[in-house]
Image (cartoon, rainbow, N blue to C red):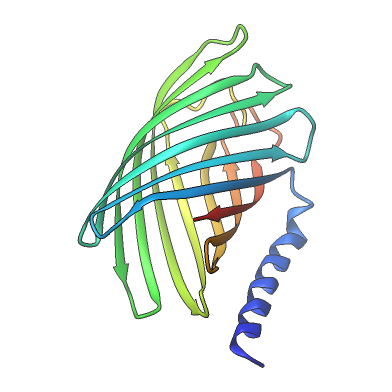
Length: 224
């Protein structure tokens, strides 16, 4: 069997294994996004992203958003800053905008010629602006993520990650407030763009969503 066929079979098996358990879970989301790299050099990187997320487990919840990320590279470190804004529509609570500036650090280490280990630390300032009578919320959140990535060859790469969310205020009046999440995904580099497929397994805080604390999201992102 050719190497490319083995890679495709491996990836298909991984995602099929996940899918078997997904549909029995409480929450199932789909997300599609587009990322544009504005600049890319050894010192500076800039990118913008737009995405749309839909809640398939019940009607009346969806979200769209846009973000900007700036990175200053210093050897294997990255100093980052950015801004995310999202509009969430939810029939169960008041709709709201979120404006989220953030700053962070990244660290990337090569374990071998094919294996890379990355770490991400981020501090966010969350501003939730509700459309109805709900009180607006302003709080901070700290995030830490570890992510090994493996180069499979033939322009394929595979990664997994685990992220912790540390927040002083979890009662924000919104549903699906993350406490931690696990990701599994792969990238396929094409001639003019990169295609990213990702599965996210989320654990939500129980303040608002006491009966459904787990989420499953399949996402597709086009990167160019």
